[in-house]
Every structure is written in C-alpha cells, then in structure tokens.
Image 1 (cartoon, rainbow, N blue to C red):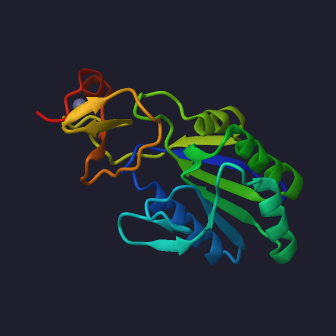
Image 2: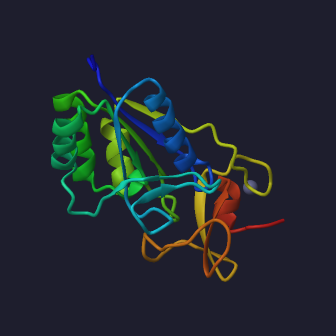
Length: 199
Ligand SMILES: [Zn+2]
C-alpha cells in the first residue's frame, strides 16, 4: 500500500514549466491506476484550474489562505481513497498549510507533490516555500531550461515595471513572463543584481 508516503517539493523559476510538470505528474500517476487530487492557489487563469503555458489544463480545488488542507484532503480521502495530492503554486501556501500537507502524508499515507517558486522578486524565500524546504522529505530544483539573456541559468525571478527591475513592493503582483505592465523574467544572479534585463 502507500507505506512510506512522502512530501516532495519541486521548485524552479517562472517559465520553468512547473505547471506542465505538475500536470504530467498527475497523468503519470493516473496511468499507474493511482487516485489523485489537484489543488492550487492563484493559478494564472484566475479560476479553479491548473493551466500551463503550453496549453494543458485540469480542474483543481482552489485554495485560499483559510483553507485547512488537512481537512480538505481527508474528506476527499474518505470518499475515494486518495493515493496522491498535487499542489501547484505551492509558494503561496501559508507555512501552516504546508504543515497540514505534511500531516496528510504522515497520518493518511498520501503522497504529496508540491510545485512552486522558491524565491520572490526580492530574491527571498516565499514563506510557504521556506516551510517546504524545512520539512519536505525531498526537495528538487527542477532541471531548468530557463536561461537568462546571457545564457546562464536564470533562477531568480525579476519583477520588471516599465523596463526596470523592481526589488521592493507587494510580494504578490499578478503578472506573467510574456507581457503587460508588470512582467517577470528569469535572470541569472549577476544580471538580477545589476538589474540588466537585456544586452
Ligand atoms: Zn545573465
């Protein structure tokens, strides 16, 4: 059975394909006949979906800060004997919600796969990501194909407003890597520090 369930955290910069990988993981698990549940917080679609930039999407339970994840997952587990939970946008979890996920693993023997960013645009840990690093069974930096414009791995998420790298302000500002007033771009550490977004 599900002896030795684990809490596993995969992190990567924006544009690394985390949501794509989350949905791929769900697919692979289902192919093995395992029953799962998908949860997310503030998906780019704004709805109860996990969506990926390459067009995949799946229905998900949308969490807010007050959601008790242990209660939510336990209820579903009673109904349909869950094998796994996938949590996208895990950086937005509160530390308490991360602990609730750990309790799901330990008390219900359900595997939890969490996907998210490690650091915000100030290059500091999101509280949820920090708690995951602290208590997850496994932590993996996603093999990143995201490169800074200079060709180095771009693992820091720069917030760009009117062409300038911004390092203070609200932690959550909705934007994407494509275009808009608030943009995010993955930069290497050197160019993050210099604030250089192009050659
Ligand atoms: Zn660079």
